[in-house]
Image 1: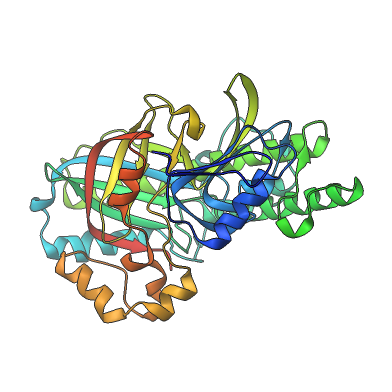
Image 2 (image 1 turned 180 degrees about the vertical axis):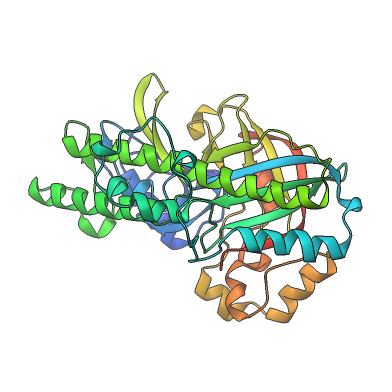
Length: 393
C-alpha cells in the first residue's frame, strides 16, 4: 500500500515504503521537478539510491526519454524455471561437485567471457543492426559475452518451492553492450540539453532526448536490441544449466521459462494518456502478468501475479532492494556472522571473503516487509527458498 506521498516537486511522489535513504529521496525530488514528468513519481518498496533516478523507481514522461532513468544495464531482469525433480533427490555431493561445478564450468562469471564467439543464431533476430551505432560496433564482443553472468548483484540460484521441487533462477542483463549504449546516449542527451539550454540541471544526471529528434529513434532502436540481447543472454545460460542438470538427471522435465525485465522504457497508456514509462529496478505488474521478485541469497524469492495497480503505473518491486551501500556493507557487516546465517540454513552460498559482504543477506532489505508493502501491486503465487547460490563477483 502507498505508505507516504511527498509533494515538494511539481508532481507528487507516491511511495510504497516509509523507509528511504536521503540520496534516493533527493533523486526522487529531482524527478518530480522535471518539466516533462507525468502525473506522479512512483517508488517501489525496494527503492534506494541509484544514478540520476532511484533503483526501484518509475517515471512516466511526455515525449522525451531519459537514458539514466533506464540505466546502463538495459534489459537487465530475471528468469526462473521449474523442474520435475525434488531437491531431496539431489545429494550434497552431486549438488556441489556435478551441478555447481558444471554451471561454473559452462557459464563465465564476473568480467569473464567465452573464449570463442557464440553462434550468431543465438543473438536477437529481426533487428537491422545497420540502423545502430553501438550495437553494430560491438557485435563480435557481444557474441563472446552472450551466455555470461556478469558481476555485481547478478546471480544464479538453485531453489526449492514449498512442494520440494527444484527451481533455477537467474538475474543478469545486457553486459558490456547495454553499458556502452547507455553511456553513449546519456552523453548525447547531455550535449543536446546544453545546446538547447535545458532547464534540467546537469548535476541531476537526468539529461533527456526529445521524441522529435533522430537521436530519440536511434536510442530507442538500440535500447530494444539490448532488451532482446539481455533475454537471449539469460536464455542461453538457462539452456546450459539445463544441460548440466540433465547430465545428472537424464529424465528431468523442465517447465517453460518465466522472464521479466526491470531496466527499460516502454510506451504505455496511463491516466488516459500515452506516455513513456521508465522502469529502473521495477517490473511491469499489469493484471495477470507473471513476475519474479527475488530476495537476497539467504532469503525467499517469489513468483507473483500482477494486480495492475494504476497508482504504481502497473509496476512492482524487482527484488528486496539494498539496505546498505556496497561500501557500507563491507565496513559494517561481520563476515563470520553473515556466513553463519547462511550455513545454518544449509545454503551453498557465495559469501567467502570481506568483499562478498556487498551481496550478503544483511546488505538487503527484509523481503517479507517488501512483499507486505506491495500487497496491492502483486499476488504471490509460489514461494522459493535458496539451496545454492552463484554470484558474479
